[in-house]
Length: 520
Image 1: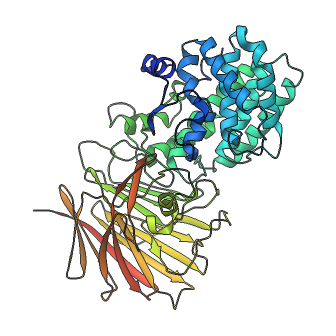
Image 2 (image 1 turned 180 degrees about the horizontal axis):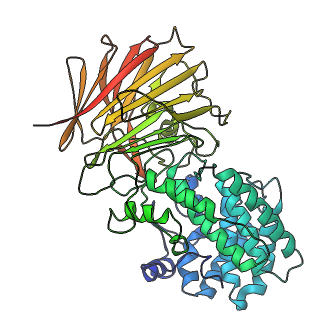
Image 3 (image 1 turned 30 degrees about the horizontal axis):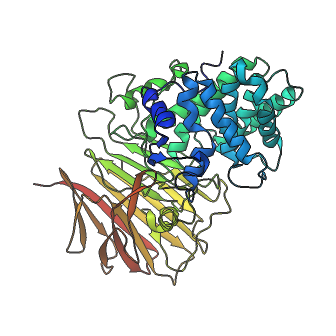
C-alpha cells in the first residue's frame, strides 16, 4: 500500500547497516564515515547545519527500515525521544522545520510494523501537532511542501487517532497552496535552483501517490508534471548533468515510472541517456519568461557539438536565493566554459557560503559600493524575455533590480554555436565604476593579448573582446582577497576556479563578443 511513498532499498544497504550497528559509523556521502561512539546525537560536526539536519531527520534509518529491522530502528528512535522530548519547539535543532517533517515520515514507516505502532503514538502525535501549528509551518517553501505531505502520511498511518482527519485535511489544503506557489505557470520550481526543481518533481510523485492511497482528496498533477519535465530536459546539460545554477550540486535526471506516459517524458529520457532512449526534442531555443530562464542548445544529438547556454534572471522566492540575476553559463565542445559557484553548504556564516551567494561568485556585472536586494522578490523584480535581433539566430534580454541603486539590463545575442554577443546597459549608475566577472574552471589556460581574453580548452579556445577598449583585464584564482573564485559540485567540497575581472569602467553601455575558435 505504501510501497511508492518511502525511499527504495539501496544496493549498499547491507554495508550501511553493518557500519551503523556493528561499527558505530554513520555514513553520509557529503561527510563520509562518522563514528558516533556512545552518543549518536552528539556525533559529527555539530556546528554544521547540513549534518545536524541529516542526523535529526532520521535519514540514516532508511536502510534499517527498508530491511524491516524494526527493533533496531525503534531503539534509536526511542533514544532520540528520551534525549529531546523536553526540548523547546523554538530550538532550531532538533526541531528544525524540515527535519521534523522528514523524521515523522520515518516514524510512520516504522509504525507500519504493528509491533511498534502503539509505542510510537505519543511521539507521532507530538510531531503532528507541531506541524499543525501555523508558526511552525514553513509556508511556500520546499520545507512546507514536505510538512504538508507528512501531515497526510501520519493521518493515514494513525487513522484511528481522533485528530487524524484534521491532520489530513490541513495537509491537503496546504499541499494545494504549496503546489500553486512552488511552480510557475510554466512548471518551473521557483526556489532559484534546477537541483531543487528536480527534487520537487520527486516530491510531486510522492504527493500523487499519497493522494491515491488516501482516496479522500483529488488533484490533477499531470499538467504540472509535463511542464516540469519539459523544463528538466532543457536545463540538463549535454554531459547529462543538471545545470549548476544557484544552490545546485551534481545530479543527473531520472524518471519515475509513473511519469513515463507524459508527453515530455521522452525528452527527459533523451537527455538522460544521451539519445539512446526517448525522443529528440525539436527546438534549439526556449525562454521561460514567467520563470526567469532563457536556454539555447545548438543540437540535441550526442555525436555533434552541443553548445548549451543558459541565462537566469528571476526572483520569485527568497529561499535559496543567490545574487545571480543575469548570470550566464556556457557548456560547449564537451567541457565547461562559463561556470557558476554552486551550493557548498547551508551554513550562512561560513565565509565560502557567503561568497557563493554573492554577486562576485557569478558571471555578472559587479558595482563596488552597491548592495544587493534579497528581499523584494516579485515577477517584476527581474525577468528575461525573448527579443528580435536582426542577423542573429536567437536573442533574449534580462533585466534586474538586484542592484539597489538602479536597473541593469543584459541582452544576449546568439549568431550560431560559436558566436555570442552580450550587451549590458546600466540605468541609474552614471557615476559608478563597473566591473565584469567571467568565471572559468581551473583547467582552462587564460591569456590576454591585444585587449582580448583567450581561454584555451581541450579542443577549442574562447576569445572575448569588449567594446570598451581602455578597460583593464586581470585573472584571479581561488582565495583572492578582492575577487575570489570557487566552485562546489558536491556539498562541503570546494575547489579553486578562476575569474577574469574586466574593469573598472564608467560606461553605461558595454558589449562583449564571445567567439569559439579552433586551437590549431
